[in-house]
Image (cartoon, rainbow, N blue to C red):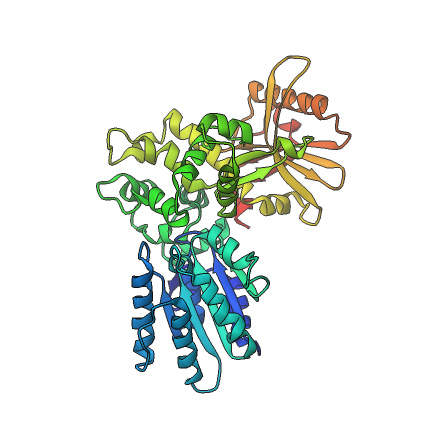
Length: 476
C-alpha cells in the first residue's frame, strides 16, 4: 500500500475499519499485524495523520534500559514534565499522567513494533495489561493502536493472550500482502507500463509486498528491476530473506531449516518427512516452530482429499521464500544479471511452475469466482496417489472439493503464450483422474479444470477440459 498524489492505494476495508474504531464512543485497543514491509505503519499513518497524541516505535535489538529511554525521550517531547522511568509500570504511569493533562476528546496512542519492547525479564506485557485494564479501558476516550511485524508474537501475546489481556483487545486488523488486483492498481498508479503477465511475475517473486514494489523503477523492465534489487552488487533486497526471518522470529534458525526442506517439494511434506529432512528433534519446540510459520503466512497445513488429520501436509506458500531458494540462494558465481540469464533455463521453468501454483493457491477466491462457484462451500487441497491399473504415480496440483457433490481437478500451467495440450498431457490427465477415482472411491462428479496464463489452444485434446481459468481471472 503506497501513496500517490495524496491517495491511498488499496486497503479500503482496513482503512474503513480503523477509521470506524477511532470514531467510536468507547475506548479501543486495536491490534494491527502482518509481515514485515507489508504496509502496516503506512496504513496507520495515513488514517491517524498528526492526530496521535503519543506515538512510539520500539527499537530492534535494544535492551530494556534503551527501550525505556526511547519511551521517555518520546514522551518528554510532548510532556516536558515527564520523568525518567526505571520500569514499564513507571513508564505507563507517566503516560497516564500526560493523557490526564490532555484536553477533552479522543486520545490516540500508537505503539509501533510492539514486540521489540518485550525484552527478556522486562515485564512489559504485565505493565501493558496494568495500563489498559486498570485505567484506559474504564474511560471512553482512549484509542490504543499497537502494531508489530513479529506476527506470531502479536497473535500469542495480544490477539490470543491468555493472561490479563485475554479478550481485552477490542479489534484486530490483519494487513495481508497485495493481491494481484491491488498489485495492478499499484503499478498503474505509479506509471509502470507492465502487462498482467509481468505483474504476475512480480507477485511470484515478491509475494505482493508493497515495500518491495516501492523499490522498483518504472523505466526498467521486470527483469532489470529483479536483477538490480537481488543480484547487483549491494542490491537493496540482497539480504532481505535473512532480515525478514530474523525480524519475525527471535531464533530463526529452525524456521529457515524447515522452509528450506519444504521448498524442495511442491505438494508439501508430512510432519515425519519434515523431521527426516531437517534432522530436528520431534518435540514441542518443533511443533511451535511449525505453528509460528503458519501464523505468519509462510506455510499452510492441509489434509489431503480422503485422508485423516494425522496425514496432514505442510506446504510452503510464501512466494518470496520460494524465490529465495530457487534463485537468490543459487547465484554461486555472483552474476549480477542472474535473473535475466536464467529466463530460458530449466531452473526458471521449474520455479515458474511451482510459483504459479502458489499464486493460484493464494487466489482461490478469484478462481472460484471465475468458475461461478463463489457461493458454494469448498476446501482447497492437493492430492497424491497411484493408478492401480498402470502403477503410475499421480499428483493433482489443486483440488476444489465442493459441497455440491462436485470436485474440480485443477491443473496449473504457466506459459508465455496460449497453452497447447499435448498427447502426453492428455494421457497424464487421464492417469490422474483414474487414480483419483480408484484411490478415493469418491462418488462426486469430477470436472477437469485448467488454469493457464493465456488459455489453451484448440486441438483434439482441448475438448477434454470442462473448465478454463486464465491468469486475467486472478486479477478480479
